[in-house]
Image 1: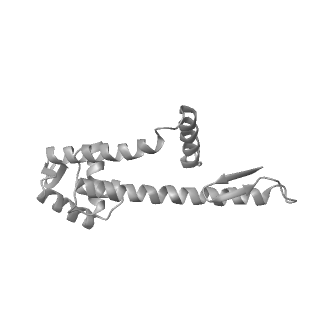
Image 2: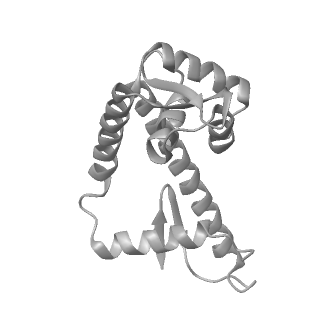
Image 3: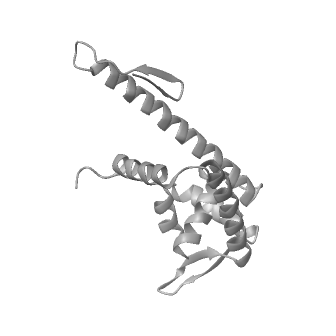
Length: 165
């Protein structure tokens, strides 16, 4: 039975090796689709970052989105949470503060340290950017059935679950 996955058209007849050829082709097709998903996600992230603020690097939107979700924090905690080095994070935080996207205040337990959080303008920009991002995402799945959505959600959950637990 032939099926099509992305640009692959596969014949699902088994081989003398018990179907290993078909399985390998399916695994390769899955890899292609995962790569396409990652590329599409990266492109959407770049667009989102530009929508957030055209004068900032895309990594600034990751910082802003994290602060939007988790609230004010020390720059070192933000750097660790978003997977950036402290120097780059500090530079972006400084730029974001100069654009009035972030507020800062002394840390209550150590006056030498600061806590940064989104300013009102920063929160509005993140919310607007996430709304635009959501529109793009939902436009892609608006015609999908609930069964398709549930199945993809289940399969992605299985793919991304921590198998060591």
